[in-house]
Length: 100
Image: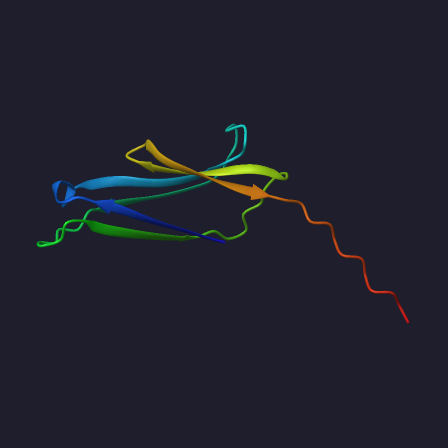
């Protein structure tokens, strides 16, 4: 599973350093499943009205303790900016084909 995030920054934010984090939490917000974090700087580019920063995180071996609604929360300098739900369903094992 990958988490892809794009942030937009205005010229007033060019050169600004910030702490970026994504948390994956359970539906009760009692358990943090994953936390990804990075420090970043908004690039300075003249003649552009808005700068875009792309973040790509690969999540390996993530285990969800139970089916339900989980949530990715995006934080900038520890301030929550957006939350995106993810729905986890339990899938039954398929029955083996009949033997012939």
